[in-house]
Amino acid sequence: MTSDKFPLMKAIFTLIFIALIYGLYAFIVTKLYPDLPDRGLFGDMFGGINALFAGLALAGVVVAIILQRQELNNQKREFEKQDKTSQIQRFELTFFNMLTLLSEIQNSLHYKKTELIAMSKGFNSSAMTETIQKISTEKSGREVFSFFREKLLQQLKSAPEADTAFKVEIQNFIFNKPVEANIQLGYYFKNVYTILKYIEIEECLTFLEKRKYSNILRAQLSYDELFLLMCNSAYNEDFFLFKLLLEKYSILKHFYLAIDDDKVRAKLEEAFQGRAFDKRGTFDVHCYDEKLQSKEIENYIQA
View (cartoon, rainbow, N blue to C red):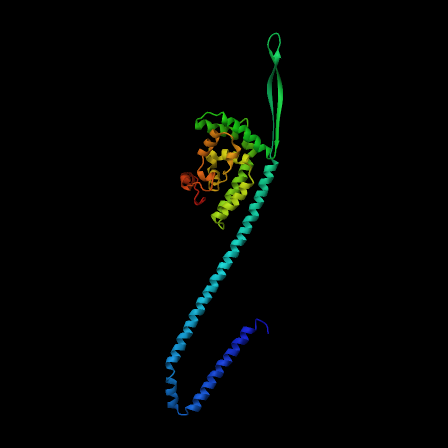
């Protein structure tokens, strides 16, 4: 007997059993009480019991409804669990593909520049003679980050104490000639921001889950990269969303390892909220409300 037929056979046997009980009951009552009045009196004796069994039947229906509702809720929770698992799997597929692309960008960076430097050679009878010397700089892969970090850090060490001067030094280095680091690193910066944004807007993830994936991203970044990411978003108003995400997920936690100057380190830290450097630090998303409203952005970042 198959499992599909078993419930049907069980129901048929139950109906037959109930019919036999009713038939046996009628036969016994007829034999014991041949007169109809006596049968009526006998039946009245069980009126209360009939009411009791009717109540029990109603209670059984209620219990069956409750059990059915619980089963539906269990099925709903199981479906939601499976659906979230599926969503996380889709998220991870895209997330790790984005990390792979980021790694390819890091390894494919190439910087080459030739500068003409005037070199004094010596004196003749009338004047000092000079020669022009070509100095070529060529860096590949992660060496590019180290090169830009060293050059920018050197300029910041000699920058005046004023906040505006410090800001100008960074802005000029990244966006203006002769260095224009953004030309080499702009695509890299955009990809880091895109990954953080992808983590932030994923609705199926809790904050702790988002932090887990942001920590995976941070593990792919060198100290030189953290320093440059920090400088890129510290003072540029166009990148305040990038700055906000760096703060929320403590991406800059180990940036100080790329800086050997206390003055530079302190100046850069002043531009960020404490959460950027340590998960125990504070984070206030409302300090960006005015900027978010000006760009008509709502519910993008959660506290």
